Image 1 (tube, helix red, strand yellow):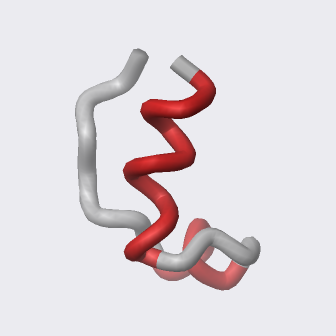
Image 2 (image 1 turned 180 degrees about the vertical axis):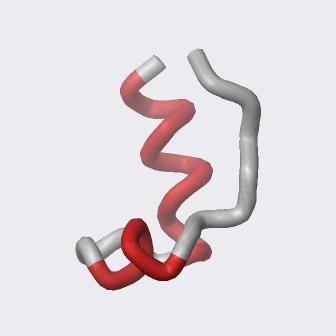
Length: 29
């Protein structure tokens, strides 16, 4: 699993909100 980092513009525009990005990563881990 890659280290946590602030979502990039591409990631946020892909439908990943900053507030839901980290919880989503932890849920899939």
